Length: 225
Length: 315
Image (tube, rainbow over all chains, first blue to last red; front, side, top):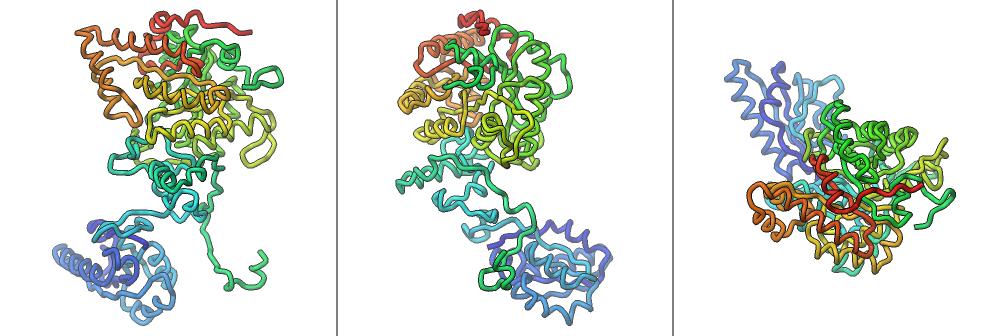
């Protein structure tokens, strides 16, 4: 899922300082599951903001709503009738949702309530670990299901480097060396031949904004392209 | 190690020494943290005549220093042959190729292709690490430029950089059984010579070079064994515990501790000289790369004690 964490409170407070009526919009999907921007987190943030603004002698009127998803116009449409009542919006969705919301209401100042931190797995309650950088050219088939782009601190395709240390990455004893793990897994599977050969430089696909249209949804003229 | 045309791939002094079957002896110089060219010339004065080529480090340990290529030019002015180190951390493929062309145009003939220490170790820990290509791909890129006269993307070069291509190898990092295969990958990518990580665990190194001999790798690339004399017990402990991928046996630390007050540095040099003597006789080892870190002024003494002087002059 997409994982995020709430922005530092003081930073948030400063961003919306000039506004008297602010709508806080949660997202019911990824950020809800990772405990950063769902219905509960919206309520908590609003309570904190309300109290802080009172103490600052600058009271604020806060609205709260949590949409199913903010990365889908169908759900954003639910805001159409209420957005006019507010001076500004805080979105607690991931960076994708925040942008889509801002795009639907271009007249309205929109502020991020969270910092988006990556595509991650759920390791424990409240504990998430990044696993994918959405490079667009997956090599997991060659690397035993361990991503060198994300899990190797240098993103090496011909690892491990000389800094690998007793199975750990040179950046930290808490960080496993991805290439050590790749070697270990492929060795156990008898598939080391997959990484014996030289791997050519990557043609990076994530250097421009990408668009994805699934087959079957393309217009006929696009199919040919 | 076939040669072509004039008999050489690059015609660098280092290549000539190795091709002649001489035991190579290379040194290292870290550029200053500023534009102090005098400092480079001063350090170079201790290396001149005592080594075949001098590695110029490239923002080593991810700390900003004078550009490697620029310090290389200072060495050329001083009459020494530089080995231009290039890491993948700080440049993308455009900048790398541009620097290779520029360095060659100014007389640089050797290169060492490295991944680079992670930026979080250095003085700008929040910098964006580039790692557009890795060290293996850098080797192949330099080889493609040299042997095919083409950029990485395939366009023709107007003037071809004939570099002698080097890379590093760490015989000690885990998993050990993979290390020789990684060496094989570098040979496959097109490396001409290898300079190894600092060696302290001789037993493990003997095993690694035996594996490399068995796989025929030492006939395809020259291997220069990495030697760094220990200056103090503290340095030995630091290398053992703090430097990633370094293997310092307790016996080395005990030997330094037993040297007695004021004699530890001499003992460190003695160990290094013993190692060099063994490497001279070791099958598959073609030379030594002496990394006397911030100890350049000791190089003449070490070279003398290791009986690697005078350095051969190959026409």
